[in-house]
Image 1: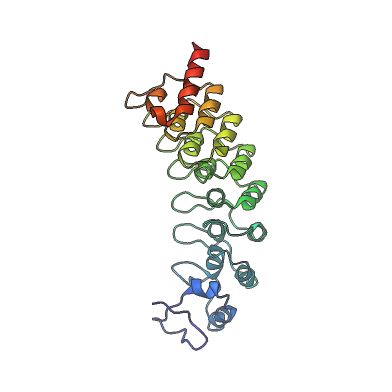
Image 2: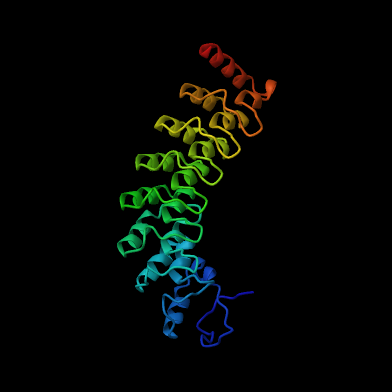
Length: 279
């Protein structure tokens, strides 16, 4: 098992192991001071290929981030997969507001558009992990909302997958492409309906003018997803926005074929009323 090193460790010993994550969690600044006093550099990898700054950002440890920043690290350093410290800061679910820390990194010149091997930028991470104020800051600082990852997803799709309506609203206002489709052919509206019980994100997208009759690679439409996920409020909203009843999926089914009869009485009634109005 890896052990955190202490001043008693011989830093020249090549077999010496260090649990950098534990050092950060325990806020053991003495260990880092000893590391530096033995000729190590603040930007050298400590754990995996993470530097002290990356570790502190990954752990969202404000005290240790500020401590490391006082040693003037190079914020341009990245991991082998391209992740920088700002991406690390946003890469785990938000536990507190660290937008001031993000601003400090930005003011030191960190790359707003640094991408990892999956094509994620800090904005994408932030939107998917609930860093609402960091997302707003990144947009204000000029982070692009148009970059897509290797699966064809933009920041808006990733935010809808996290069911975060506040971030979705911020990205819509910043001009994120509403109808970007990923490699499965799904846009943000489809993901917002499919990914969880909430309806707020989907309502925002519909109100903003998202395509309501798009079809993914299986031929599924937002209306079909709303039926499958038993979301009558969205079925109603989609009808009001011009959702078509006659589109078929790859199995030859239209949306009404997916209704589960007595288990979805509200949706059955919505379809009946809409069809009467339409015809």
